[in-house]
Amino acid sequence: MERSALQGLAAFRWGAWLWMATVLLVSRHDLARPWLAVGLVGLALAVTVVDTVLLRSNPGALCRPGPVLAELAVGASLVLLDGAAYGSGHAFSTSQALGSVWPLTGILCAGIALGPMLAAGAGVLIGLARLGAVLTNGASIDTGGRVLSITNTIVFYALGGAAAGYLARLLRRAEAEISAARAREEVARTLHDGVLQTLAVVERRATDPALARLAREQERELRDWLFGTAAPAGVVLDVGTALRAAAARFEDSFGGRVQVLVADDLPSLNAAAVAALTGAAGEAMVNAGKHGHASKVQVYVEPADDGGVFCSVKDDGAGFDPSATAEGIGLSRSIRGRVSEVGGRVDVVSAPGDGTEILLWLPS
Image (tube, rainbow, N blue to C red; front, side, top):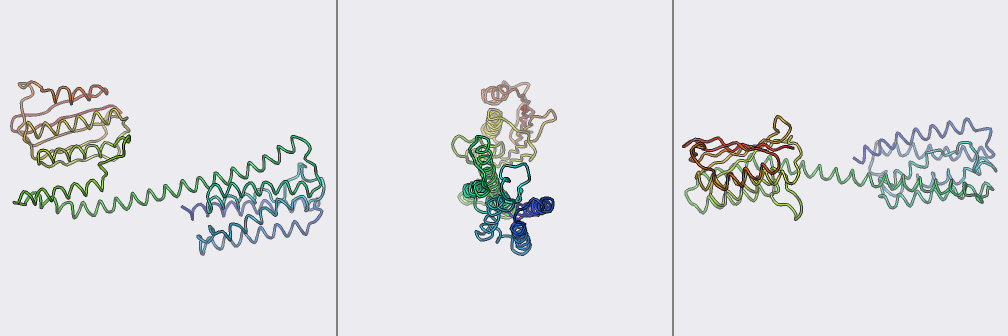
């Protein structure tokens, strides 16, 4: 991230210098001290070249205080000595300032390297350098328009530095979060293909109940760590995390196995819909263990054709005949009631000896 930002800044720096050189060439006849103007533009060129070389050889060096302060010093000199280079009467004239936008590059670089507060401070200092340029140019600031012009310069530079620093901070945070997510995903893939599968085999084949329980507990702890089945207070769990938590409760209570599969491209659900979906699916799992004596349950969630979410909870339990069996409170209230409250619907597919599948549709 830092290298990409510095590469963009390098392009901006060269463009700003080329424009500054163009201004110098076009305004050469207006200069009272051309030697001073050429020297300042030359210093800016030296900084631009050195920073470009550092970007290619050692990008991290550009964020050290030395190069940043050097660029800020040259930028402040361009602003401060602008009036001296042009001579009296230039401070509030319509002619282009010698430094143009080049001093802004140092402020932006300070934002990337030093953060928003220090970059804003650097912007204020360079903005105040314009006040010094006005005074050295012999101009007065006895009108509101001139005071506003100087204030505008200070605010412009300060906001530029603060914005650059804040954006760099956000990008670094995002980069760290992406790196952590990728690392966790890699660990999850490795553990799922190795340790978790081994623990599942041990649990299924162990003749000692204590060993099977230990394997199940260890597997769940690993899944909790990998997939985060707990959330801070007040934070709504995502569908996959909440379903895995419900699956863990089923396994604790009934000793069966639950496989939770959640598609990556689920549409966004509000908190009420997530609660309804996970609550209904959790109740379906409880019914599978309590009434169907199921040993295996598969929960699958994917986008529905109408733009909502579809969820299937299928077990290998005893099953029943829906047409001949009255629905209990768990199915009628905890499943159908929850889903209908958020505008969804529920279907039940079951047959004696063939297990049960609860089908849930929820709008997005």
